[in-house]
Length: 272
Image 1 (tube, rainbow, N blue to C red):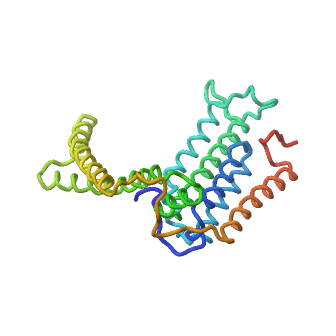
Image 2: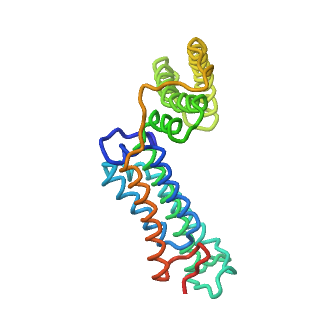
Image 3: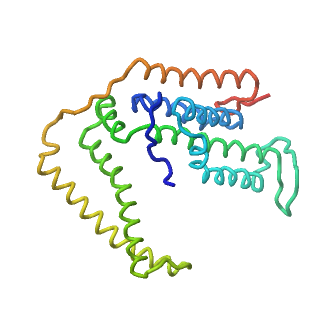
């Protein structure tokens, strides 16, 4: 399964203007980073799952499978902080266990859980944006709404489109090697040989495709005019502003409630 690819579906999130959607996601991401308690990233992580299932109409098993590699990353944060947390940062650390010179403290586990949930929250909202945003619409929105130079925008779009093409080329090369009896063997030496066998034809294919794109752009005089016309024009609708306002209200409301309950840590706030 390829991670974080566009999931074509009919939903509210798929119809939100990509630039406005990106602003809403950035509001969340900027709000998660300064939060040092485990409650804030947990709420944002669960809200991302809810938004993808409810407003994005993405299957929950698909979401969980896509996030599977990052569960290991989150667990790694918990284990690393539990074993190597600097107890000098806590006024009165609560020691739960000893492993030789290492101390497992409640504060270390709490810090690890906070970091792990923060990583999951950041990844889940990034996934929400990527899986519900058509790459072509995203570039068009950046050009038309964010006033990005169409020369740069087209280059970004071409680069993005090259990735699945190279993946297909890689699959074809692997199949061709297997047909000719050149199988994949275990071991780091064989892995290096396979990398060389795959890298050379992949590089040659990428160069051929880039030359064709460059010739097509030159033949159509791409970049000579300061502006250009578009077949499709994306608009910012009232529902898009409602989405952005809802995200801002959700962030502000969540932080205020957690601060009132004494659970918010970060932003210069320490719970009593």
